[in-house]
Image (cartoon, rainbow, N blue to C red):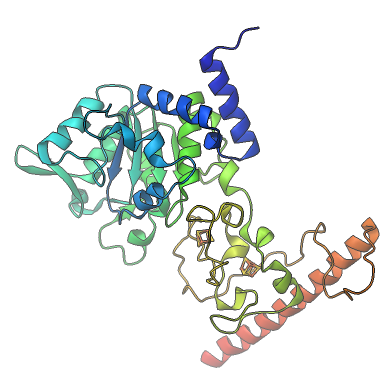
Length: 367
Ligand code: SF4
Ligand code: SF4
């Protein structure tokens, strides 16, 4: 049976989603994706944003964002990333007209930044009409109701992020929360992260454009499972130190960062595998604790240095045994592996019991 170009792209996107890998490492698929993008304009709205997610996206190496989006907004080329306040060449009325023209066609809406809602959202205005500022809230409600699908990129757009942290004087909220309060049911996908990884965005856009938003399997927080399912703690290069009870006591110590406030044990994202800056580095390789930026509760009600509760300190049984004599041959029978896992878990559990007791004592002391 002959396979049409469209079918081929759909199959490819499906495989990419299944494998959790970038669809676009292949130059041929990259070209095909660029063509698919030309069929659907994107409006990128920045509300209560620092533009960090835009900067992160510009850092994409494979494919380079120029290959899939930016080439098309250079003057003289097609303008398919129809509106992006940070990188578009147009400004003022011309830029706003690009948004208004685009929303009359089927389009994909990307929201970066939280949505201030207090007093009608006056804390954030994006452009003006007839001499009056238009709030980010107005744009989000109007465009959100018309879009084919919405991507909330970054922790702020997804869950409110830092602008929503107490006391939240602007009444900032995440996009889904605003939609829910206003009866907007457009399919919406959350890509939290401070900043979000460029592959999370490009992979999601590819799947949405080629197969529709329903094709993206999301978790209970609206995050694509292909990027946000793994627990950082289970894939961390310092996990062996955690299991062995070796903890950094101060920045720069080469051990597990749990006691310095690492949120890896409660954070779901594939950062250890993807890394940032083209795969060069990521938070923990840089000896900085994970701050949990991909989680709905980020930036948390506790301090960044506060330790998180761990439900199960037992390491996965597939890990090689630790604390063994490295000069002896390793017995890899399942029974031995299970025993080693249990022993390592006991070490971890003992450490946390000790920590918990110490914290309790410190807490008691305070009261
Ligand atoms: S607590 Fe943090 S640094 Fe330690 S193993 Fe888990 S994710 Fe890695
Ligand atoms: S490691 Fe943690 S803090 Fe760093 S980007 Fe990933 S989720 Fe965010």
